[in-house]
Length: 92
Image 1: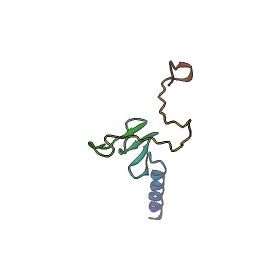
Image 2: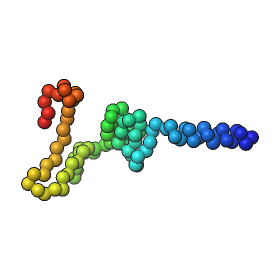
Image 3: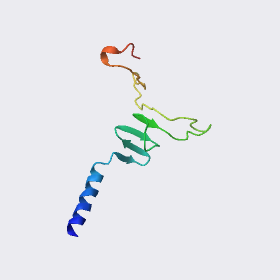
Image 4: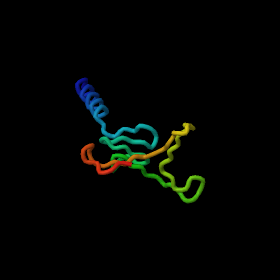
């Protein structure tokens, strides 16, 4: 009986250690290198799913970027790039 309890304990430890789906925070999940926000089984490297609502204070906004730096050179940008360093046609 003692061996059975020990075996069950090790199975639970192994299952816990090798779990692939981790909840990072409420409604944010990591699964096999993919990050899901609002979805626990992300289909993409970054998968954001929620009801963005109708017209209101922030109509249909999923991503909000705000740079609080007030210098003359402050900026907010998103850079989209495809390909490797040797194979990039253009970069903005």
